[in-house]
Image 1 (cartoon, rainbow, N blue to C red):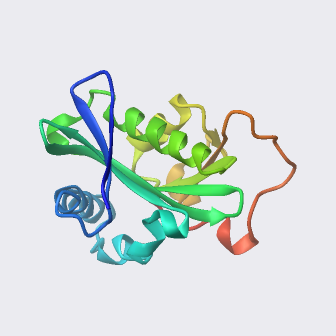
Image 2: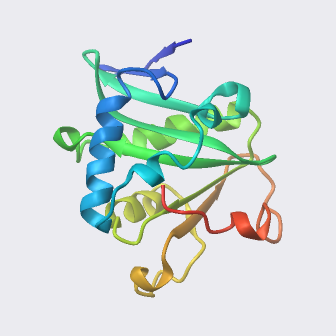
Image 3: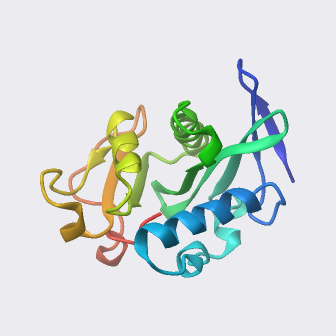
Length: 184
Protein backbone atom coordinates (compact mmCIF):
# COMPACT_ATOMS: atom_id res chain seq x y z
CA UNK A 1 0.00 0.00 0.00
CA UNK A 2 1.28 3.46 -0.86
CA UNK A 3 0.49 6.54 1.20
CA UNK A 4 1.06 10.13 0.12
CA UNK A 5 1.70 13.37 2.03
CA UNK A 6 2.06 16.75 0.35
CA UNK A 7 4.58 19.41 1.44
CA UNK A 8 4.32 23.10 0.58
CA UNK A 9 6.98 22.64 -2.16
CA UNK A 10 6.77 20.77 -5.42
CA UNK A 11 7.96 17.62 -3.66
CA UNK A 12 5.67 14.74 -2.77
CA UNK A 13 6.49 12.31 0.03
CA UNK A 14 5.33 8.74 -0.45
CA UNK A 15 5.80 5.63 1.65
CA UNK A 16 6.30 2.47 -0.36
CA UNK A 17 7.57 -1.09 0.06
CA UNK A 18 11.20 -1.79 -0.86
CA UNK A 19 9.93 -3.74 -3.87
CA UNK A 20 8.22 -0.66 -5.38
CA UNK A 21 9.65 0.16 -8.85
CA UNK A 22 10.45 3.77 -7.87
CA UNK A 23 12.87 2.53 -5.17
CA UNK A 24 15.10 0.64 -7.60
CA UNK A 25 16.90 3.66 -9.18
CA UNK A 26 17.91 5.06 -5.79
CA UNK A 27 19.10 1.73 -4.41
CA UNK A 28 21.02 1.02 -7.61
CA UNK A 29 22.86 4.33 -7.44
CA UNK A 30 23.42 3.87 -3.70
CA UNK A 31 24.95 0.45 -4.35
CA UNK A 32 27.24 1.86 -7.02
CA UNK A 33 28.43 4.59 -4.68
CA UNK A 34 29.02 2.17 -1.78
CA UNK A 35 31.05 -0.04 -4.12
CA UNK A 36 33.11 2.91 -5.39
CA UNK A 37 33.82 4.25 -1.89
CA UNK A 38 34.48 0.96 -0.15
CA UNK A 39 35.86 -1.13 -3.02
CA UNK A 40 33.43 -3.98 -2.67
CA UNK A 41 30.11 -5.17 -3.93
CA UNK A 42 27.42 -3.33 -1.98
CA UNK A 43 24.85 -6.08 -2.46
CA UNK A 44 25.65 -7.61 0.92
CA UNK A 45 24.99 -4.32 2.72
CA UNK A 46 21.86 -3.49 0.73
CA UNK A 47 20.35 -6.92 1.38
CA UNK A 48 21.48 -7.21 5.02
CA UNK A 49 17.92 -6.81 6.32
CA UNK A 50 14.78 -8.43 4.95
CA UNK A 51 12.54 -5.99 3.09
CA UNK A 52 9.82 -6.65 5.66
CA UNK A 53 11.85 -4.78 8.31
CA UNK A 54 11.03 -1.57 6.43
CA UNK A 55 7.26 -2.07 6.61
CA UNK A 56 4.86 -0.57 9.17
CA UNK A 57 3.86 -4.07 10.31
CA UNK A 58 7.44 -4.64 11.51
CA UNK A 59 8.03 -1.14 12.88
CA UNK A 60 9.70 0.38 9.83
CA UNK A 61 9.06 2.55 6.81
CA UNK A 62 10.63 3.46 3.49
CA UNK A 63 9.82 6.82 1.99
CA UNK A 64 10.67 8.61 -1.21
CA UNK A 65 10.66 12.25 -2.20
CA UNK A 66 9.23 12.65 -5.66
CA UNK A 67 9.63 15.67 -7.89
CA UNK A 68 7.21 15.68 -10.80
CA UNK A 69 6.65 11.96 -10.16
CA UNK A 70 10.35 11.00 -10.25
CA UNK A 71 12.29 9.83 -7.16
CA UNK A 72 14.95 12.36 -6.12
CA UNK A 73 15.71 11.20 -2.57
CA UNK A 74 14.68 8.61 -0.06
CA UNK A 75 15.42 6.80 3.13
CA UNK A 76 14.10 4.29 5.59
CA UNK A 77 14.06 3.21 9.17
CA UNK A 78 13.70 -0.14 10.84
CA UNK A 79 12.88 -1.06 14.42
CA UNK A 80 16.17 -1.08 16.34
CA UNK A 81 14.63 -1.78 19.75
CA UNK A 82 11.37 -0.98 21.52
CA UNK A 83 12.24 2.72 21.90
CA UNK A 84 14.52 3.30 18.89
CA UNK A 85 14.27 3.40 15.13
CA UNK A 86 17.42 2.93 13.06
CA UNK A 87 17.83 5.11 9.97
CA UNK A 88 19.00 3.30 6.85
CA UNK A 89 19.56 4.11 3.17
CA UNK A 90 19.35 7.91 3.34
CA UNK A 91 20.02 8.83 -0.25
CA UNK A 92 19.77 11.68 -2.73
CA UNK A 93 20.03 11.04 -6.45
CA UNK A 94 23.33 12.45 -7.75
CA UNK A 95 21.54 14.88 -10.10
CA UNK A 96 19.65 16.43 -7.16
CA UNK A 97 22.26 16.94 -4.46
CA UNK A 98 22.98 20.18 -2.57
CA UNK A 99 19.26 21.05 -2.37
CA UNK A 100 18.57 20.00 1.23
CA UNK A 101 16.72 16.87 0.15
CA UNK A 102 18.56 14.52 2.52
CA UNK A 103 17.72 16.86 5.39
CA UNK A 104 14.08 16.72 4.31
CA UNK A 105 14.19 12.91 4.22
CA UNK A 106 15.66 12.78 7.73
CA UNK A 107 13.01 15.22 9.02
CA UNK A 108 10.21 13.12 7.49
CA UNK A 109 11.64 9.90 8.93
CA UNK A 110 11.94 11.51 12.37
CA UNK A 111 8.33 12.72 12.14
CA UNK A 112 7.02 9.27 11.22
CA UNK A 113 9.16 7.59 13.90
CA UNK A 114 7.79 9.96 16.56
CA UNK A 115 4.22 9.34 15.36
CA UNK A 116 4.84 5.62 15.78
CA UNK A 117 6.04 6.08 19.36
CA UNK A 118 9.79 5.85 18.93
CA UNK A 119 11.70 8.09 21.32
CA UNK A 120 15.17 7.78 19.84
CA UNK A 121 16.80 7.53 16.43
CA UNK A 122 20.00 5.54 16.05
CA UNK A 123 22.12 5.22 12.92
CA UNK A 124 25.56 4.49 11.62
CA UNK A 125 27.27 5.80 8.55
CA UNK A 126 30.47 4.70 6.91
CA UNK A 127 33.82 6.37 7.56
CA UNK A 128 34.08 7.35 3.87
CA UNK A 129 30.83 9.28 3.84
CA UNK A 130 31.75 12.76 5.13
CA UNK A 131 28.59 14.24 3.61
CA UNK A 132 26.44 11.94 5.75
CA UNK A 133 28.50 12.69 8.85
CA UNK A 134 28.01 16.41 8.24
CA UNK A 135 24.27 15.97 7.65
CA UNK A 136 23.75 14.15 10.94
CA UNK A 137 25.80 16.61 12.96
CA UNK A 138 23.98 19.54 11.32
CA UNK A 139 20.56 18.04 12.09
CA UNK A 140 21.15 17.58 15.81
CA UNK A 141 22.49 14.06 16.04
CA UNK A 142 25.04 13.26 18.73
CA UNK A 143 28.16 11.45 17.58
CA UNK A 144 28.77 8.35 19.69
CA UNK A 145 32.44 8.37 18.72
CA UNK A 146 35.43 10.70 18.97
CA UNK A 147 34.82 13.25 16.20
CA UNK A 148 38.50 14.24 16.32
CA UNK A 149 39.68 10.72 15.49
CA UNK A 150 40.37 9.51 11.95
CA UNK A 151 37.05 7.97 10.84
CA UNK A 152 38.93 5.12 9.14
CA UNK A 153 40.18 3.99 12.58
CA UNK A 154 36.62 3.84 13.95
CA UNK A 155 34.72 1.95 11.27
CA UNK A 156 30.97 2.54 11.23
CA UNK A 157 30.24 5.94 12.81
CA UNK A 158 27.30 5.71 15.26
CA UNK A 159 24.94 8.61 16.00
CA UNK A 160 21.81 9.05 18.07
CA UNK A 161 19.11 11.65 18.50
CA UNK A 162 16.33 11.79 21.04
CA UNK A 163 13.07 12.88 19.52
CA UNK A 164 11.24 15.87 21.03
CA UNK A 165 9.54 14.95 24.27
CA UNK A 166 11.68 11.85 24.77
CA UNK A 167 13.42 11.51 28.10
CA UNK A 168 17.14 10.91 27.88
CA UNK A 169 18.42 7.91 29.78
CA UNK A 170 21.84 6.77 30.91
CA UNK A 171 23.57 4.17 28.80
CA UNK A 172 22.93 2.93 25.30
CA UNK A 173 19.68 1.40 24.17
CA UNK A 174 19.80 -2.15 22.89
CA UNK A 175 22.10 -5.05 23.42
CA UNK A 176 25.88 -4.61 23.11
CA UNK A 177 25.97 -6.40 19.75
CA UNK A 178 23.50 -3.83 18.38
CA UNK A 179 25.60 -0.81 19.26
CA UNK A 180 27.83 -0.88 16.20
CA UNK A 181 25.99 -2.33 13.21
CA UNK A 182 27.35 -1.89 9.72
CA UNK A 183 27.08 1.47 7.90
CA UNK A 184 23.76 2.48 6.42
